[in-house]
Image (cartoon, rainbow, N blue to C red):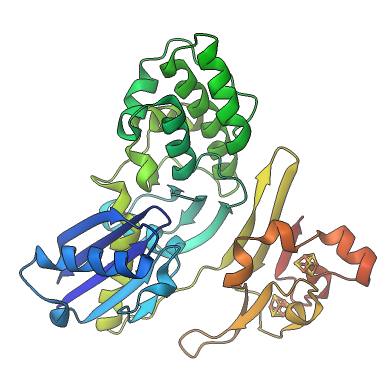
Length: 355
Ligand code: SF4
Ligand code: SF4
């Protein structure tokens, strides 16, 4: 049986091919401006290495930011589920995952079978994302793949006031003009980003069995700082960047063998920044799909979905996910304007707001 997973991230497209119980090929390429084209190129490159063809692949699952745009995928699954499932293949003991992608960071908690129990994502601010690190590397005129090693040479990390993408760039330039070494600037940024990662991880409980996935897990300087803050050394897959695509391939294999997916029980969306926590959590185990949250929300962020013929559940719509900070004014303002909010309206107490 040949199946495949493809992970279309905002910066890189990754594909993994599994034959029976073995990873037989993987490929990483740039996503570029045309994600449909990138997805085809990534998948064809991965399959070419196996001596098989696209026709031989029984099932393909797509994940990542651009998963809905993969024309040849049989199904798409969230990257959160795929990272948890993918890391479980290599390290079944892992319970806490920090996924550092091109445009957001996620802390994920999973069980012994790689099912997601809880997760938190920070998608509001670019600080600490792959795009942010690319921008800083460009500003410092350093090759991105050397930035991690260079940061490790620092003896005097510079404290950064912000990791806001706009201000951090000008702060980095100002330090350079004052003769600060590039290694100290990079180490200072890694320090600030790792603090933010620590705060995110604390929300899902950090356990000793912890890992980092995504392209940034290849940055040794960043991994060292995060390990220092967390107090544990992460176990790292040989290539942490393909974990999402591997998880997708494993879901594809499940479909071919008739195994149904387990959903996340608590789905948490939002972000935290210097002003506080802004999260909407839906406990799917309590939700009966009544739709009261859909009707009450003036921002239209909720939707009801049905998976595999199971009971309907509420979730945050795909369209609203990456702009919650613009759409939801918060529970207090919602109360003032319409005398109610989603958390109060939910009779099953399935919605928790820290917003
Ligand atoms: S109001 Fe509560 S129980 Fe009803 S669909 Fe929304 S989250 Fe589920
Ligand atoms: S607080 Fe109000 S606007 Fe925000 S998600 Fe709940 S109902 Fe919608």
